[in-house]
Length: 99
Image (cartoon, rainbow, N blue to C red; front, side):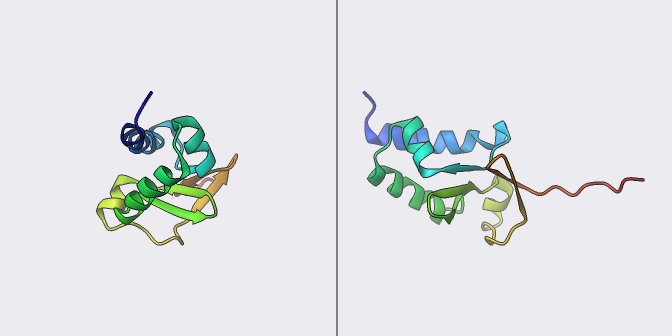
């Protein structure tokens, strides 16, 4: 059985892996279920990652992973352009002009 400390490190690794899977968002219940975290442990680690500009709580239990480039630049305002596709928030990418 994993300790809560190991689970919180697993949470950090889990959110770092999401962008490589094409995902930038998740819900609190999804993370808690997949990692077996208790609410208190989730709140502690998500608060720490939010303070480090690695995670942003958008509303309720909906969170967005801050891309590393943005975290290094001090995070981003919650007004960044996002598109929701199938419930997953992704940064908008400029589309080339089409003829």
